[in-house]
Length: 231
Ligand SMILES: [Zn+2]
Ligand SMILES: [Zn+2]
View 1 (cartoon, rainbow, N blue to C red):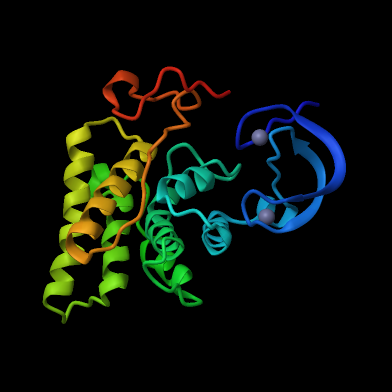
View 2 (tube, rainbow, N blue to C red; view 1 turned 60 degrees about the vertical axis):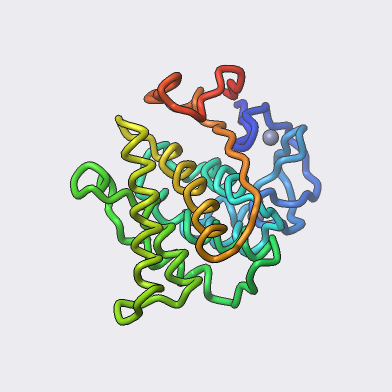
């Protein structure tokens, strides 16, 4: 039986040792390991996707939210297209901002961010004009500004953030691509947070999913790189 690394696609080698888990950053026992050094611990393997988001966002030192999102989206429990993408955006943005020194991430904040967008159903982009990834940006802005329905400017900012992301996703055209929606939302978010709140963090989007995604829009997607062909 041959197993492949969920991160890079390389063949896994049977090796009983210890290695740092790529997802949670803890030193844990290995059964198999990737020659590129990737390893996923047992707890991360068995975790649900909300738990994976929390584990990654709590431990990552990465300042680029695109890198954090890509790692989460490579977890074996992550589907190519799913409502799982809706609850990634807000925690990923908060974690990246914290690592960039732009905010202090208090305990429980990631879980709270995740909960705000965990109930947006699959396919809501097409059924009610609401991409959950975009709403994740609104949730992040709401958390950062402490917005509520009773606030003035803060409420407008949260609504505006979601709206800008929705325009970006709408402009890209269909059919769906949850990866593209996450990337477009992160790009919108980085520009929005700098412009409106003076918060800065880096972003370099690299889509690692085009060859695995049978519905990839390829040349119709600005993130499509024909040279990036992972198994
Ligand atoms: Zn690997
Ligand atoms: Zn782990």
